[in-house]
Length: 343
Image (cartoon, rainbow, N blue to C red; front, side):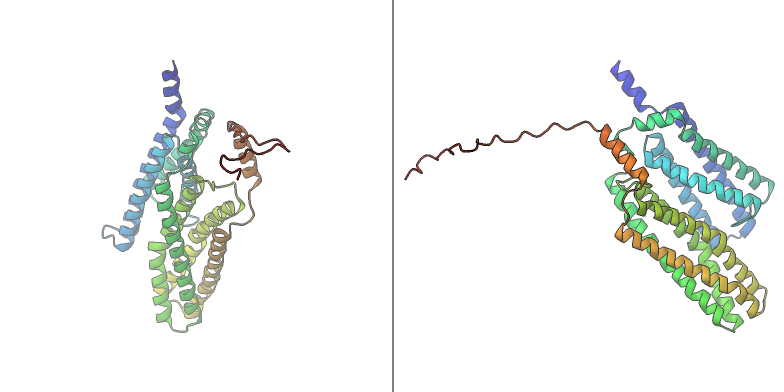
């Protein structure tokens, strides 16, 4: 009887199994949509941009598969990461379908794959938080809710490296944007925006997404959690806002300035786009410095949610037996005299 109960407790419910396959359906749809997008953008010749996009797509597919497996094993951090990136993917897919920001999704096949991926993402997130799934996750052991010590160190090193690279990249873009604003040479403007467009295509999206990914793992999979401390929650929200700001604003301004220089537009017309770009890059630098300060000083303590969760966990823990104190001699009692010490 007890063996049957243990196997039922370990085996995931049907909602988790359905969520597991829904994530894979959405992932495959995103992969096929990205391949079609690359062929539409670069043609059969490809190039450095196509190769970089394809490598990044394969890397994210592999990571999603890993997080999906962890979710099916009852890892809370795997479920949270899949939820965050599933909702972000849904947001960017929706923007692409309407051509609002980023790369538009064109063609019947791309639209069909985008809709399929969006539906699968919504279904997967909903199933992962179904009542039966919540009960099953709550029944998992506490050590199954956190990443291993080795993975935590790998993610911490990766997060530091990527965050430093992200700050350096935005600083470099700020310097180039200022240079393009103050110059009167159209060839300098062309060279600057050509380089910025190349860096934007290869590194800007990659650094922001991987910084968010490694930061989320370091939050939900460790003692810090994600929404229990003010500094962690603030940094998480700031990272998402900056990533969306990069895709929706900075990327669009770089692309517009690059297209103007390609078309041979006057210096003043290009500068009208370059000034807002420099301001946006400077704002991004300030926000990255602010996040660095948060990671260093860790201010503000626990959130209300964090205090409630900590209190609930303290109450759920079994009481430890009180340690036995050594018996002390009564007040006024004569202490025993060691043998041989009378003299």
